[in-house]
Length: 447
Image 1 (cartoon, rainbow, N blue to C red):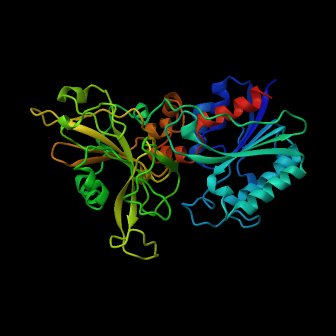
Image 2: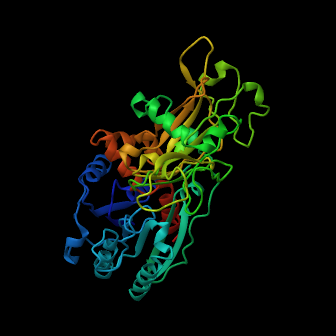
Image 3: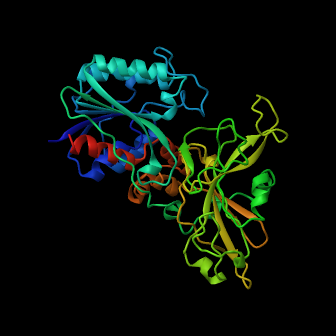
């Protein structure tokens, strides 16, 4: 049986990628997407597709019959990174487009529905609207199953929590979300071996960020790697999270001085006793070992605008400076549109007879933070040389796409028709393909 699919808010077509990767017989009968750059990527990857455009302008007769309706509606107005405008029906917010999906569901009654959005959709501020939506679906005859899933539990080294709702019409076997799996892919596995110099911050920017991080200053004297990251109500520039080094989620938020960085700390190789030191010690073999792609020891850090006198102060209008906050989870932070949410820190060493900096190894337990989609705030990598200076670079667009579970082949097709800034944005706005594969496998292969 061929599954007919309608992808609303389609982006670059991550749902379609998952179905394709699983080998599930399907036909995308229509999409609804208004971002002209996302449409270019979608068609570069999937071919010409019936795009119905703005879902708010659609009538029921415009929509082909279909079996699976996917609706990852805009998150900007419910995300903790946004202005919190909400999604009340009739509010005319972008997140309020959820209610436009009623006409699709009531008019076409597809067998399966899949909703995806940020975790905050089921948070205290917006849960009443979520509950109201679930109640309406039940009135339409759907049984609903929802759960918050994290990409790091489904094969991708990104700390990206999203809520998913699977809805099934009529008689069916009870649905179960996919079980978490052991993470084998690490941040080091998605990083490119050669990165253009344009992705690195200028020395003056790097020095300013280093000087504004008390915790990072301490790290220069300790044989450790740690990851700094954003957490509400904590002193962000000193908090250490998961010892496995999982980064935070990537998202599409802009502004606020947010970002994630990876930091590598140079040390005397005689200080290293165990190459598998779980505390995060950078490997310190002989100099030749640092240039052979035997990577161990990478972290992600974020850049946050903080009050220098009181970093916990969130008063609007307070003077702020950018500070590095390290994430110690071994993943990336959430991929968003703000590239400062993911600065990659790569440990490097310098041969005593050469001025060339060579990448040191990355540790085995690294996960990136959640990816953002803004070009000027891309995730960055920090490298330290024997002079105790760091280099910081953004994650490249390809690295961001890899952290969303996209193939390099799909990336190159999109790269041919879009700028880097749009590629970052498209990654941050999308859904991790590996998570979708787990959901669809349970839904369409097990039913």
